[in-house]
Length: 245
Image (cartoon, rainbow, N blue to C red):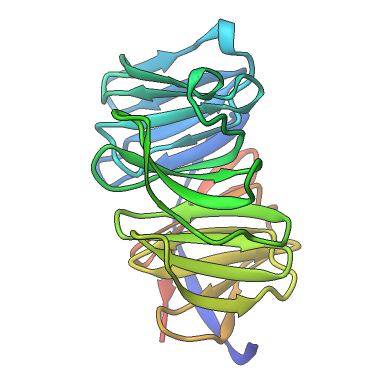
């Protein structure tokens, strides 16, 4: 359900950025991005880089826990866990783990876990990468998965038909009809969702999608952090302040 009202935004800052993919940024002005298949962490004082040519193209990177970053190489069915200096901590090769899994999405969980969507079983799984065991699993999802985001307690799965919210034991707590959204992000259990070249806000505990009143710009990637929205338009990283209800 779409609300008739709109959320106003104010532009706080714009800084030049030309990369293959913007991943994340945080309060101390640390920016994570991918460029030419190289994962980078940039601060005011230095830029750190990580590449792994043996594993091919980076499918996704998750920085929710800055001390345990995960880099997903879908083509090789492998996840690399990095520390805050981008040094390797763990390598998880799903080709060597029984039972065989074929993840299409990876996202950070609590403790030594991450959420994976397992294409083999069509289930969302909370996987412990130190013990190679499951902590939790959902019932099968009978809809094409478009995106996934998580924090330590919850995981949201965006499918072609529905938006699902699961708790840390894999139980479904909310299911909302997808009205054409293709990407999502989360902060404090509030969601930002992309539909074509527009963004909508879904407040925690509600089912009404509220359009953001944005200026005319390309939305390549976006990130929600508290009341701050970042939009990458292939040339600049734009920082907006949200005036939410």
